[in-house]
Image (tube, rainbow, N blue to C red):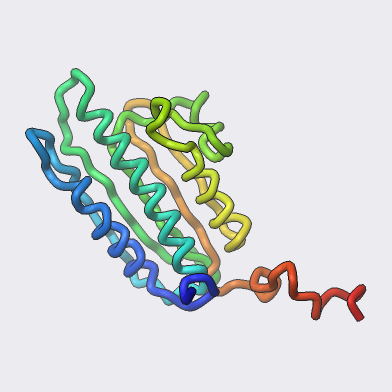
Length: 187
């Protein structure tokens, strides 16, 4: 229940917790090369957000990156550079921070990239995914936090997701649909 409210959090702690949960998928297994994680954390202030929801965004994006890198490992071509996920954080200005999660996978073609945030869209085989991860992530970042979620990719050169969220939420973002105290029609 504690994760269901806005609070000031260390986003690096959320990223590290997510990586800990995913560590088995990152390790070298049964003749497969492991996935290297490179962290370039800058000095971020505590960020006011729904911590559990932001951790879900991190989980969705990192899981997709792992899937993309594992898919590349299973292709016939030899793996040259080592499969890598880079996580970089930065303060954009006095109001926003950015979290960049990039992989060196095969990349996403343009015709797929514009559908990524659509509900139920998936590139995975039937039964392997719901296609809701990025749609939900988009709703969490954009609608619940007033931020931005963008994807940059070029076929053959990997993919980068950039999450930008305000350091401090505006009071209108915190109201629920049941809070009528600021609605003039309720007086």
